[in-house]
Image 1 (cartoon, helix red, strand yellow):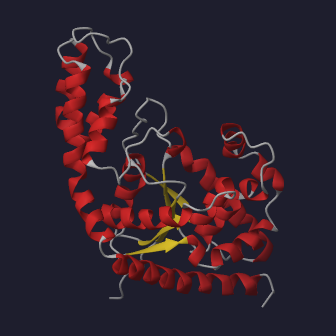
Image 2 (cartoon, rainbow, N blue to C red):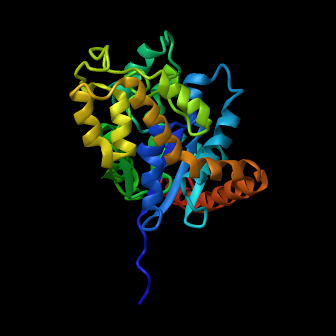
Image 3 (tube, rainbow, N blue to C red):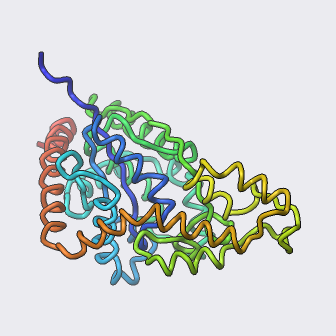
Length: 329
């Protein structure tokens, strides 16, 4: 019997800085699980970085390379998964240009992250790239004719806009694009070290490239329950990022930690020491793979070249269909 065709997935991360534990738990580990059952394209979307860092692009190339190393160290297999640098595949930009012509501006202005980024980064005069970010994101997905996109629940509205753009194109020119469906993924949501959302811009992350000593120091300085001043004060673990990390990386002991914290038997300092060693143990194998990959740049180059070739083959096929549907070929 012929082998059943695997459904196509495209998923990606922006490289405005080094990847951190939130990226590992929120995306990378899930991609590793999915790569056996899907035709997976894992993107490193460097062009998206230009929406907010176009004035100084000096670190983007280094961040791209480190992200590729992190992808591989986390367990992505280049024989199963195409690791794709966005700017190496011209079809991303070609489709973005064409979809920009048919996407109403009003659709883009209603995207919540457009306003959020303007306010968060104090952007007085936003670029078209920032406004058109969702069109480029849609192009990233649709150029592979991806049928499935793994997302968290908070990302579902962004994917719905991609479906709207696909529907509009299909209505105008014929059915070229499948409407990508969300593959909702549940994962441990790790707060930042200060209790806020983990973000490179806040500088509150544990990075995958951190050393064991850096991890220990970051954990030592972590924000804790502000109401637990002395060791014997009753704690509130649900308000403490130290407990959130413990529950994610050592769930078998989390209930006991919660009990002793609430009872005032466990102090924050010993808990942090314990957590630091838990994280180091959990990350040691990844660090070992990172070191081996960093020492073999030729292998990383070959993986990225191979990923670009596979992506170009797929996306060139899509663009030929698009050009013909629009009667431009």
